[in-house]
Length: 428
Image (tube, rainbow, N blue to C red; front, side, top):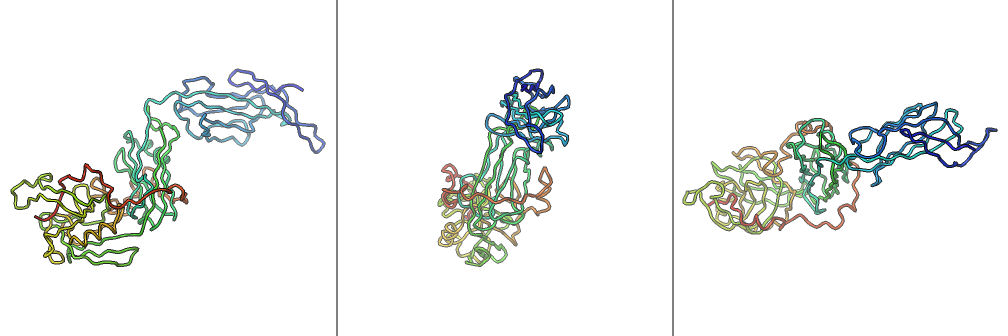
């Protein structure tokens, strides 16, 4: 019995005998010298450009029966075999700085003899790698308004490169939702459902480019992930016209609270906001927002039971100095003030990701981005326009084990450095 010889980029490799089979009066399949050639590109060695495809071609009447290209880390490169078995070409991307093994099985032109061969090469190391920081990643319990955020390590402006990045992002949830990605800027993406997350959902998100090329000199780096759970749907509907806040849990009203919101010149923003963090005490100093000491609107005091909804300093908080105006008039500098008892209750009932919606204020609309999470103020059709791929995402089921061990994202989440920042806005 002869040894099959398969030539790979000019090298002849002998292959040991394979198992024989028979049937239908045909003699056993033999390992024959097919006299054929298998050509592989890239040809081997190191410094291979990872943007090139892997191409395997059978010559001299032979045909390919199987081709696999796998990295040392076990990641397999996708590819397709032509119907006639004469050629295989990779459809997946190669990673930079990675060693690959190509395994090929082939048959002679008559289909009576088979052989196998192995080839390897190493791709060039990346000049720069693209990584991501994803939130929320602490597996904790959040409100149904919490978006998934992605902060990229390098800006990506080119539309084709953005598509590569977006394809590397995966969102899973139980229950399933329809949602989409939105490019806030060249380095930031947000994901939200068309509507809010379902109550008591499990959510997972991941980013994995597999080392693929994003744009010139930039390749995928280490993967990233995020996971969290949602609690009850908590919504505080703040009516600046009636000076009352109505609190709903899962669509059912559970409390009505007299409040005061921003007075003329300091009117509270309208729109939907998401709880960002909570602190039991914040020192508020008007000079940090351009209101000089000695001004009639100046303030300089400790404020308790603080639930932040914008980074510019809008809170729901205790305002014992304005209890006479709560439920009657708007006298604050933009925050939503209430009695100490009501503020403590609100602080305990709400957590990061819960919803605060302001209506009937004279203030402007909440910003969609840059001042907290105003994502929900964009209509769904406008949100879809922010996707580089122009598509929506229907999430596959999440793995409940992905959020095992997470805590609560309720009060006390703020960093100590924020506890003394003089943001807005109690009434003087």
